[in-house]
Length: 208
Image (cartoon, rainbow, N blue to C red; front, side, top):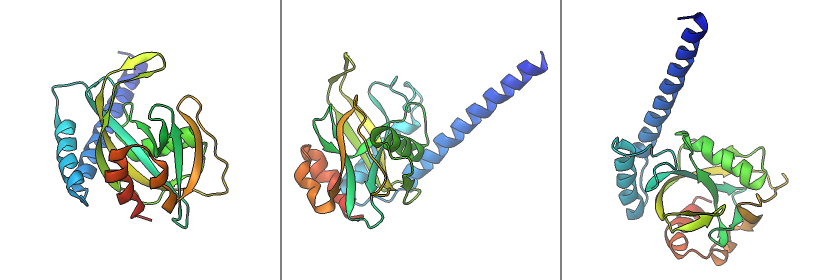
């Protein structure tokens, strides 16, 4: 074996070790999460069962077409009076920002990445390091980029993220039609997903 081959194996081992560590940290985050309602209690149990399974495709990727990890961002201004939302094409409503883990077990990093991609914000930051909300989201079958996607579950952690009102924002045309800041008392009047309106957005608004 050459030194180069030995080095490549070492890098691969380090990558596997880092990923295993991130998975363990995610499991710990979910375990230590303190539910604020029955919905979070039940979804926390389901979340952990999926994370601990070894008899199915990796839950961090969309190869698991039954349930996979996602991260959402509740983006607020420094005064906690406004919320940044995007008008999503698939759901046809104003909604929070977020997206798929796509192999990354560091869901805080995923949430920040999605904020940048979906809104153009380059300087958004975590307000707190741990997730502030946990939910299992049911996604109906839909067509994305010309291909049908079967109904499935999103195992979702939500992070509180702070951004500056003065920073420019722009939509991500293939995913959303617009992004804009809402006053916190405007949010529920502008969303069109009954389950989210009942179970998710009210608890996030209470953080403000």
